[in-house]
Length: 63
Image 1 (cartoon, rainbow, N blue to C red):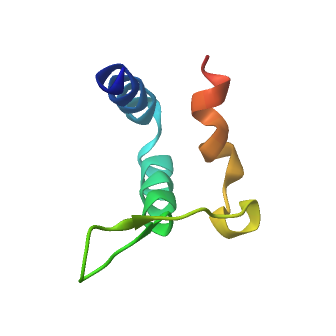
Image 2 (cartoon, helix red, strand yellow):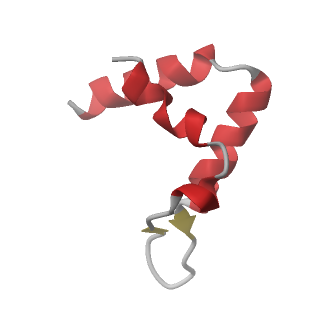
């Protein structure tokens, strides 16, 4: 299941324009809090914080 999900995500990412790929990278950076003490921490983000909400919903629309 984990591999299938990763492959699906990679396929969707590959279809994006280079501009949208950069935006997606920034979104994922916003969703992780780097930690020097332990593993990086995932965090929730609200729609207003993400910015380009359409890029976030692409995987759901692809099904």
